[in-house]
Amino acid sequence: MDYKNKNFKVAFIYRNTKFNKDFVDNLYNGLINSGIDENDIFLDNKPPHLVELCSQHLPSILPFVYQNSNVVVVCFAEGYAESKWCGLEFRSVLDILLEKNGNETFLIKLDDSSLPPPLQNFIFLKKDLVNDIDIIKEVLRRSAINSSQVYKNKKPVLAMSIGPDYEGDKESNIVIDPEIATTIQNYKVESRDWDVFLCYNTKNKKEVYEIANRLIKNGLNPWLDDWFLPKGYNWETSLKKDLFRMKSMVIMLGQEGFGKQQRKEMNEHVQHFLEKNAPVIPIILSNMKSEPQSMLPNTLQKHVWIDFRKSKPNPIKELIDCLNVKSARNGL
Image (tube, rainbow, N blue to C red; front, side, top):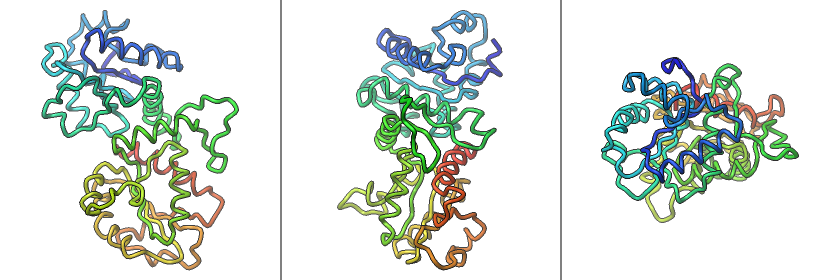
């Protein structure tokens, strides 16, 4: 097999003990049962990799395998970094975490052992917080988001729909099973993985909440101050802790204009997203009657609006497409 050019849908990294192997094998079988071909999954204890890797120079192969995979599942457990065999992988793991975006890695902690210093700045999902089926669904979602179809068609590939009678969110023309949407939301909130920072005037709270809930139903995790800022703490400090985990920013403008708090957020944080080449998307809310363009700050004057006053093109679908595709294309 040409490992340097092969594109795997999923690649696993783990230390081969019986407990770890049973867990990873269960995920592997679940992915196979979900329709992924075994040749599209890299697991070094499965054929043909078990045989072929013995005859090839492993340190020169692993970086290509992990870099060319849609999603890399890192299963960390006690003794991983000290293992001689895993030491080769460990160097590749560090490179992957530094280079890949959040959707391209899935980090799972299998026990209570301490993470080595290089990994302590990354967020690992604790295995006992979620069941294997939910992990499999999330791996499928991430593999699909990062597949070549996203880049070629410029539209999101979301999680599979497991209910044949479920028609999805008809208004946005996107089909995603509600169980999967809930799984994705719970995992992302737990790991503080935010797809978009919603910046809005509180006078438009009702419509903003409606848009946020539509995003959640389609597998996205929006950050709103009302939902996720802890009560009784300094809001600026709390927001800054989550800001670097946010993949994009949406600025919402209604008939009341920008609120005082909203302007403060824009002045302090728009530049953060622009500097990391992240999407900053202005939205015209449905109650806007005047011309909004002149209200934008100079840095956003050339940004294209999504207009919720119009039904065609569908604004919620435009926003969902934009958040999914732009996040993947910009490596966020």
